Length: 459
Ligand code: 9MR
Image (cartoon, rainbow, N blue to C red; front, side):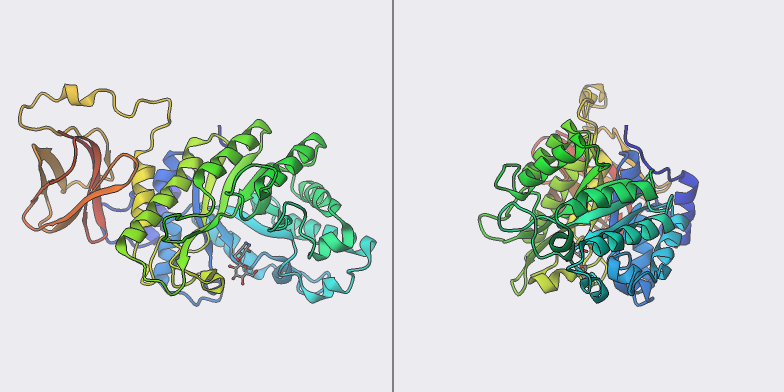
């Protein structure tokens, strides 16, 4: 069983009321409410601009309503927390920890030993192994110790493997000055500072195969060694910054490869977490509606790993809105689940529908519900109603969807994998469900931010 940070229903409702959701019936229908039902964490970073109060109120409202795990984009890194030697600055990190507490969220700490965002003063010691060891140890002791019991998990070591061939990354002050044993030591020190925190190795390009030539294959060999040697690692974070090339070969790397890594890690009793997901398109290209839908499916495929693999529990996206995203620097665009105007994209819908309708694999999704349908002309069976409003109802008769309680509504139909199959607007309380093959579907009716979702068998 996953060791989930408890978020009480009370706290959640308080958070939602606090978020000022106008609708009478959309409050429960959030990524986080369904994530909690499925015993997983879903989250997004708090972008650096949030810490200075530079983001619209709607950003925070979305963040605390939709997510139940948080990580700081830059504010807990080495240069932010120890800008000069042995002088620590916890202001921004404390601000985030407080926000997480107020909103019942789990906290990730990112990152302790990394080659990047290391302040200049550290480089003064690059030729002094003994001093560098004590600098790293002191940093970890202080930072992990400061948030002991409040930061639930740490990226202890970040991006220590080279991109080109599987070997350690050489351009790192820690690697050059100490050698690869800085990694083992960092885990031991972090564990000593907070024995209850989960401790991860975090890296990118881990979705490109688990073979000795791929980064994940190299990592797996190290994890085996760490586990055998009693190094207190408990998780691997897969950053999963991937690109949709919009060509025939859409992606480099795949959810299947990452799933293989999860399964290999399960054999070692190590968790897999998706820690920095974004699925960007190349900058400058025109991104079509169908591109965005395909992007949504890829988001959903990565979510499936977290839902389906017992040693995977976290799905964290590296940003909320495309407007505030690091991806431009990588020559990519539109990689997140909310657009520039903080409107949910098709990827949001795919995730929400998947979370709503996921059933653990050992359960039969539908146990012959259609045979219990005794009304001759009504072919619908609502087997799961989520976030049902008192006043809005829907049912399917034949091929017609009837909606009562709202005049105008947007209707979307998804298959059981969360893929959109039909979309229309209803102005008079009914919609013809044309062109949908027989089967089980999720129908969502939306009016503004209010929505109602039901599962139907369409015959
Ligand atoms: O999103 C972060 C960006 O604001 C910083 O400028 C950048 C500096 O290295 O780091 C970004 O976050 C990175 C994360 O810490 C580690 N994995 C890759 C992320 C995206 O570059």
